[in-house]
Length: 95
Length: 95
Image 1 (cartoon, rainbow over the protein chains, first blue to last red):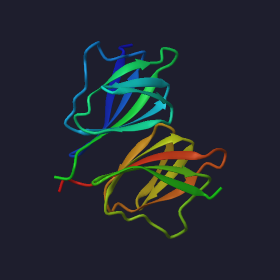
Image 2: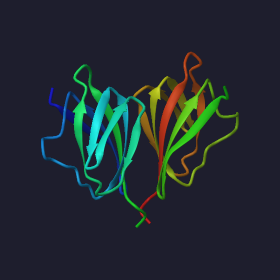
Image 3: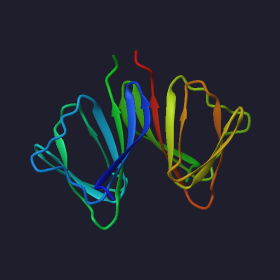
Image 4: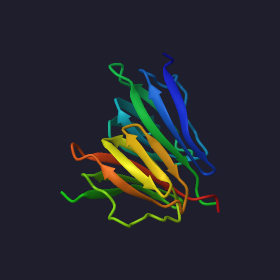
């Protein structure tokens, strides 16, 4: 298995929904996501830690966070005991 | 418990994300949702049947459907054995 499998479930102009399956995946050292879109993300299964420049958020199944565009973040850790399944909703402000 | 509990998890202009917990809930006879927004909905837990004017879709955990605006639909059935948990993403076309 690759470390991370991303499947696009919906792609509709200003909204894109992805399922992400992580197998102990973490972002590479020094890497930051710096996205043009906002991202709302929920952990459906497993556990993860998301690092921001100002701290870490611990997430377990059912936990969700909203990440505004250009708020830098990285996946610091996902559990190796089981796959971590995320649902991510990428969206934009009204045009 | 009421039959259906809706919690808004995100409300951001053109995207609204809701968690819906159904306890054997079905839409009232003769009732149809006829929404101005598109709705992408996934069953996270449990099982359901969604009726459209031209048929029924059976859904179990992990199944998702995209319901374009004004496509009439109703919840025909949700399992009574356990709560059915949905995640619904309501969204609009680009302005």
